[in-house]
Length: 110
Length: 116
Image (cartoon, rainbow over all chains, first blue to last red):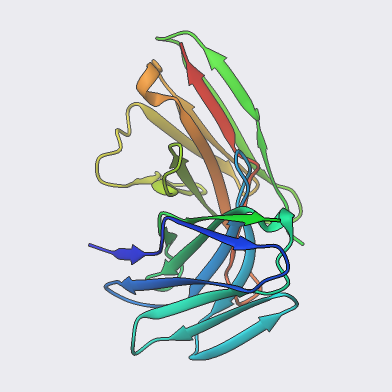
């Protein structure tokens, strides 16, 4: 089966930096995605990595190492509104649907 | 960006009734749509893949006779939960892939179903 692991919960301070890790063991790999999801709402797209390295987009960056089956999402200058669940998802191949991890619930505190 | 519209946003129904959820792609054609289910504090679990003009593909453990999927046009897919029971109470969400090369998923706003 497909296995995607990420921490269940994290807490960080407003203005700080937090790194959310994701490891995966899947039968194939055709891209890794990070989504943000507030309670009761649809996930919103944050980032996409298919090649090794760092992708930066404003306060959010995502890193991928395919050889290690590892990714992280880096959030800088944390704001209270960043409190949400962050979902790591892998596309196994081609146009197959994404397989999601259980999500990491991030709480940003003052 | 591409928009996927889903409704209703929430529905409360009695046990034994059927509920239809609609998912529309507003500014693009979606030959494929994915239906996910999410229980509280759990991950999104794929239920089925909806293909325009053909039968849906269901994931293992998902009853195709209970969760009827129809994808009659390039912009509309529907999920009908037949004879709903309290254990079917969940957050149902549809999604469609974009066609720009990065193939990210656009999600509908989700439907919170509560079966009494």
